[in-house]
Structures are given as structure tokens and as C-alpha cells.
Length: 253
Image (cartoon, rainbow, N blue to C red; front, side):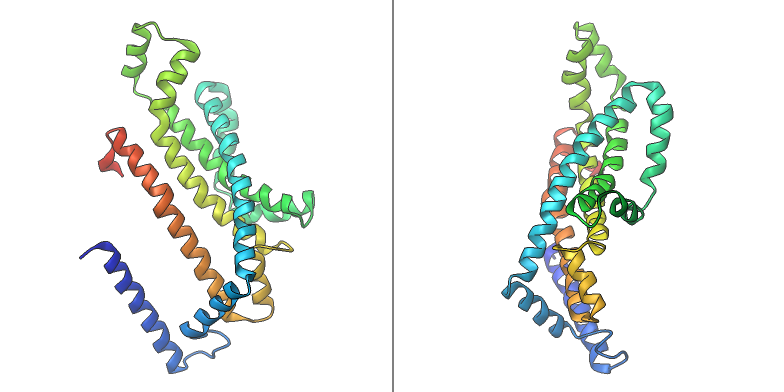
């Protein structure tokens, strides 16, 4: 059976279980609304364009923050890989900061930038930078020595060696870093928007929670999850698999 049908059956069963729990009345509708109520709320949000504007605003924040984090992360990764003292000092700090949840940066962002889009973008940048940095560092450090020796034998050195051998050899790790940076940035975005003044999916989620609109809360959670899964599987996973196949690492995918 194709994977797509397995997934359809799986989610159909989940919806049936959800509807069954709703009909049994184990919890009040104000806590767990039925799937059809949630579907109606989502449809209404798209019909009046509210959710469309929220999604557009969230993606604007994401694209700006992710682009910045990829640039900074790549440069830091190269620095850590090529400069030993930077790796032993700055690298240790970045490794520690990578374990800090993105939501922890939200109060700091608000204090520094206020309730503005800059605060949201700052948190997104923090969310994606460190994971990109570590993947670039690993990618460059793990370049097979035989490639370097072969290139040096043919007279390649310095920047020529770096751009013609090191960079291409580290691309699989870089692509994985981009995929992880997207995932971390998406989570960071939602955390930041929860404390923002809108627009954005996170802000609307917080607004709906304040007014106990559980159907909208669950609806937005579903939208966030669907967007994250679709973008990861249809965009980043495909790119990563193609790169791994191109580099002869398809089984590792």
C-alpha cells in the first residue's frame, strides 16, 4: 500500500477517535470541540482572510529571520571549523546556547526591541543560527583528508582549495543544517508571536486562548503542524535526499 494511503487512513482513524471522544462528552465542548466545529472555524478564518493574513505575516517573519540565520550560521560555522581558538571558545558558547529553548529569548527580545516585528525576527534568527553553525562546522571538519591531499597534489591551495574542495564536500551537512534551521526557526517564530501584538499565527493563537475560543486554538495548532510538515517533507526533505543521493549517501537519508 502506498505511503500516502497509509497516512490518509491513519489520520482518518484519528479524526474518528476524536469525534467519538467528543460525542461521549467526556470533556465539555469548551475544552475539546469536535473536529467538524474546528473545521468550520478554520474554513471561516480562510473565508474572511484572517488566517490568510496571519499565515502571510508569519512567513514574512520566517523568511527574513531564516535568511539572516543561514548567513550568520554559515559564517560562524566556517570560523569555528577553520580557527581552532574560536572553536575552543566561541564554539563552546554556541553549543551551550543551542540547548536554550527559543521561548527563553522572547523576554529579552521584548526588552531590547519592544513589541515589534524586530523582536519576532530576532527570536527567529536565534532559533536557526546555532543549529546551522554546528552543522557547517561539522561538515567542514569532516571533509575526507584524501580529498584535501589529492587537491593539494594537483596544486590547489588556499581559497581555491576551500571553494573547490571543502565547500562542495560539506554541502550534505550544510543542507541538513538548512533543514534543521527551518524547523527550529519555525518553532521559534511561533514562540515569539505568542507574545507579539500581531499579526501572525502565534498571535492569533494567543488571542483565541485569551477568549477561550478552543476551536480556533486547535485549528491554528493544526495549521501550524500541517505547514511545518508539508514544507519539511515537500521542500527540505526532497532537497536533502537529492543532495545525499548526488553525494553517494542515499542510504543515510
